[in-house]
Image (tube, rainbow, N blue to C red):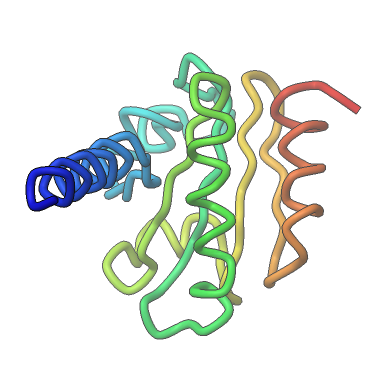
Length: 144
């Protein structure tokens, strides 16, 4: 009986570790990584030229923001659900004041959607998950 219990515990624990390793989280951007991965607004300030190889969304957030914490699970879910189709990034506004100012982020959360071509779109404030998802499908993936 002890062997069975040990085997069960081993496989359960292995499954939990495997699941935890495959769960993706959004990457936090700094000014430097933003300039490399999204848009080099220093070199090219007058024209948005998205640099990624797939579209992205960027969640401007802060640790103290209750609404930001409310939508954080949505961003985690999108990171996994649309893995390979879009990038999901976050910007901590308390640590990245220049990025916050560049995009005139005055209220949190604000989510920017960068398509491969064209201007970014934004959603300001916490909205239901399906509204973010509709914007992902329409703006980033070109689906209706």
